[in-house]
Every structure is written in C-alpha cells, then in structure tokens.
Length: 310
Image (cartoon, rainbow, N blue to C red):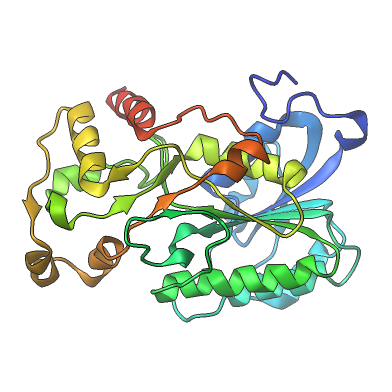
C-alpha cells in the first residue's frame, strides 16, 4: 500500500484487518473508503436499500439501519474496531438525537477503539476575523452549530468510557465532483457579495484532503482531541469567489454594503456572512501528519475548474 496513494502508508500486519464502520457514507465517506483501500474490512451504515448495490461496488459491506430509529441499530454493537461518524444532525433543533442513538448502540457491547467525527468550525461562532485554534471555547450562534456542539458532548462522554474520540472541526468542503461542492453555481446565480470593508474571512478544505484527514484520525488522533481541518488559505469570502470566477472564466460577483445585504439576502445566506474566523491547523500537520494535496484554495479551485470544464 504505497504511502503516496494511501495516507496511512503500509499498515502494520496487526492493523490490516481492522473493521471500520462508516456512518453517513456519502461523498466524503466514499472518498475515505477509497483512501483506506483494501487494508481494512469496510462497512457502512445505510438507511436506504437502494444504496446497497453502490456500496458493495465500492468494496463496502452495507449495514441496514437508521439513526432516527434506535431499534434498527442493535447490529452496530461490537461490530467495528474503528468508527468514522459523518452523519449530519437533523435539520432542526439544538440537540443531535442521531449521535445520541449511535453512542448508545456502540456502548451496548465492546466499544470501538477509536471514533472520528466530522463537526464544524461553526461551533466557534463569530471570531471577528481572529486566528482560532482548538483551545478556543465554542460559542455557537446558530442552531446548526449548537447541534454540532451537542454531538461533540455526546461523543466526549463516550470517550470517557474508553473510546479514543477525535473531533474534526471542518469549514466549507469543496471539489469538482462533489454535489454542490463547487462555487460555479453561485457565480452563475450572480448573488452579490459583501464589499471588502464589510467582508468576512472564510476557510475551506478540499474533499479529498478531508477524507485523508478522517482516515489518519482513526489511527493517529490523540484521545478526546479536537482538530481543525482546513487548508492554509487566509481569504475573505469575496477573494475566494474572485479566484473561482477567474478560474472558470466567469464575471466576478458584484459587491454590496452589509446594510443592503441585510435587506436583500436570505437569512440563510446572511448567517454565513455574520461569522469571520481564520483557522489554526497546527494539530492537523503535527499530530495527524497530513500533507495537503491542495494546500490552498488556489490549487484546489484550479483543479475544480479544470474538472468541471472536463
């Protein structure tokens, strides 16, 4: 298993048949499964019988179950040695009953050794453009972020029972072949951006680099550890979309004042324009030892634009 293809490199013999369960095996889960390769036994929880064939084609053993129906999760107890939890919370409320149901199911029998969970950098709230490391206390400003804080708390409790839990806080995910993961649609819609003096800092991570970080966290993360997973960019949102527009050969989006944006943009869009932060990723480099394939959005957007043109 060459290290230039798989982020773990050649696994020791005692790890080669680890049983990895992916919960929420969508785009990032399938990328992580590909990165894991054949050195582990791969399983994925799915609530849809229609996905069984696709999962099997990807070399993944499907496990039918629904996080919204705890009675269907009994088979998860003792099933895996490592768990990658990628399932999002429900769309409403401030708690995550899905993660609670998963934690209860895993705790019924021998617990997995490690569990890596994708959370969001939104748990930090608005930081006024400051650099943010993992020691900063969460200050979620939206229900979406509060649900993630609740999920993190549930998993920390599981960690106190002996599971090595890794909480990966992730910003915007992009890739040419990811559904909704490229900025081209936003550019074509022509939705305006904030003018520079009102703009906010945003962070990103390419979906392939995120998948590799997930895999590394299953083996290398320290117990009960938070890790920011972002690339090395430090861009205002407008600068990000200007780069994307130039790469696609499309017109740059218009800029407006924040006061006008508050009158014209949707509440969902405004929620993303109200938080500004830049991510410190020292743990990603030093502890997970991830070398990004797309160290900044400049490289990632170039690949994305090329992929979509192709």
